[in-house]
Length: 291
Image (tube, rainbow, N blue to C red; front, side, top):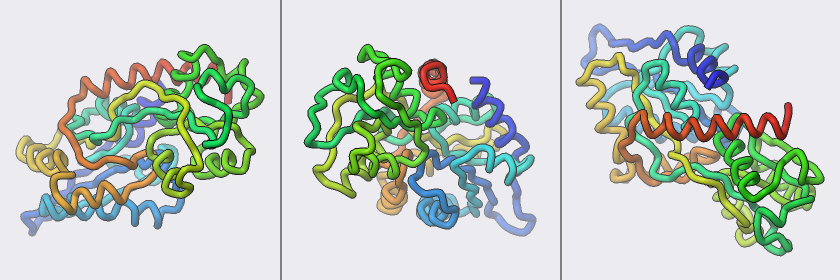
């Protein structure tokens, strides 16, 4: 947990919950860690998450000010000592937020896991068949990356011994093109990018294996909020897919956070347990694919 805890401590500490002096509505800062969103332009990221922010604002009757990033380094520089009232992030970042006083209350109804993907007409049938191949894997700083190593090792392979080459990539759309153009033989990524690959090139790719599954992206709220505020936010954040506007907001999200059609109640314990698995496999990732 050392790496994520340090970053989370810097980014999420120092929260500001501003209550306007002449208004009955509150103003909440919402941090969104977009992960590998398949977009690196702030304008595009804000547009992608706007339906979600608008839905929460409308449902609560409050002002929601989002701050979105794919990099904790960027968030650290931009935010300084501000703190979120609402935080959306993947399981390893959510686990770090728990240690800083945040409470996970709602999770995506789709788990996160890794898939090994090849061209549909290739000869590979299983992960074990990939020995000697040119492999692309999701970044070690995502959830998908460490889970790629988990599945690889379970198949009896190591990234540092059993492949012609291994490429760690941040943008899954770039690596997908490499597979399509036969610059890579296989790609390991998460369900969000896999969905995008299928939509962009139907029937072009297929899956030869999957990793274990962990809970997906989650909303956490600041434990320092009042009980009344916590209940109000939790009531809005859980069951979003039951509302047509909430469902559309979830469906507008692409990248590693894509795929959810509803939000379910969750607990800190669920994310603490998931993070133990991710951290152990990140250590294996670092050992087998040194930076």
